[in-house]
Length: 332
Image (cartoon, rainbow, N blue to C red; front, top):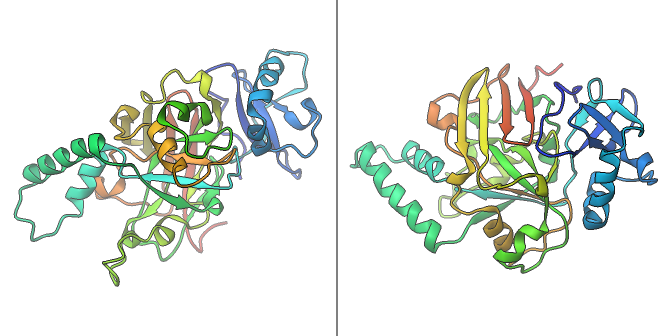
């Protein structure tokens, strides 16, 4: 885990994060736009406090967080020099696939059979029509990720030697505030505490089970290597984000912009996703709902991740993360 790369930049008066000083255990921190952090274990008188426990008491704790954010006499310390961890340790990670219209079109065209008689333009038009129908008539596509993939927003990402086509997928992630089971679309956003950034790395070569094509996708293999989900740096309360359906998701690879799309391109918004997931599973405080990745992945560019690459990801109002790729066996 690396020290904070820059001063905080986020919407609203406060955010949450997880930090540690050299040689010390991590702590949940209240983050100020001034670039300062307050140790919430001390400020709230709870030595065993974690960010996940904060979300378990979110409605009661949020007003107190606002009071602390306005207290300039509190024991604030600079963010710089602290190690920044993933801002929450979720019990469950729900990942939305095929949720950005343009991204799905690009992937379908990239993966189409060499024997496909359609021109690229014809294929794109047909897939676009399918996506438009899906947004109106269909249901979200959601699968499960492992919490062990979560890593910090400035940590190195080790690319396993078996991953032949590692790809980036920057996403907006919603953090759950309270248990949610069978909630309606209208109720769903009330269950969201805040938002953060996730980079949901995928090995494209192992997405599909070629030995058992009838079974289809293999999400365990392609997405769940340790550290494949850099998260954070901060969790910004939902009240500070005016419209999560209109945020810019941007990823740069070695300084070159690869993804730059609005969440307006999502087929299913956050309320639809949360409600859909809750019809089957019970969402728990601190859980993550990853909302899918926009167009501009490596398969589109014909350029996959390799050792030495640096990814910089940002979402409007949520700050930015910066991670370096390291080929397995070369990490220092």
